[in-house]
Length: 290
Image (cartoon, rainbow, N blue to C red):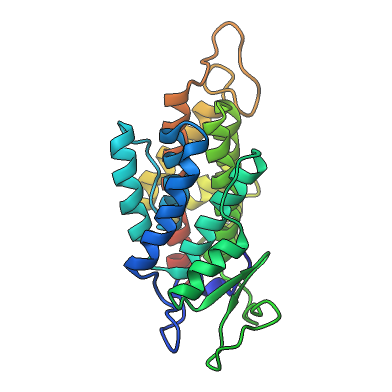
């Protein structure tokens, strides 16, 4: 993950002398060409899915495995185009995906190659890990990381960084066949996120619980007769199943006689459900804090 002004995750800088807001189609094609060359090192379908997952997350979309290699290629192009609407997130997704391959002893475009494409297409950023640097109006490159805004990050901004790290790890675990651990990683984020609701008040009711179930119980009372109340019921049910020894067994161990082993399809379903709930709860937290 690259370090840059967290507000760019929501709204990148406007175009000026350089193209700062979005990645142009001709630049997308050059990044795509690099990906096609990388895919020759291993199973091509898996490699396409690897990059598609990175760009899907950057675009705020859930990553589903394509039904064939041909569809994976087409879906990757769509994911890249969607992610390209936010230039910093696009560059971060490409860089992170390349670094993950490098950790697996595969060749992937390095920082110099990525910066070459940026300069060629006048993209207003340069990678200098761990920072993503912003070009100023005088064509110079800043020599220090862009400073973080002085105001404290909102829970959405802070949680987004934690969430992205966890989703990347969860995705790697799924790809590597560690289905139980992948679900456990996602569930940890969900449990952590609920603590942000502690202290929220609405119509004289307050969330004061300390632990997951207590917090959701209070939040359900605060959110009575709303969509949030229904979502809390679903989240509680899923969490209970995954925690139970006779269910997913990801928190208290699995009952060796009656427990349900999590397979690849199950793990993908659970991770996608949890990610959907996390996104919804982030939005609800911002709404309730107003």
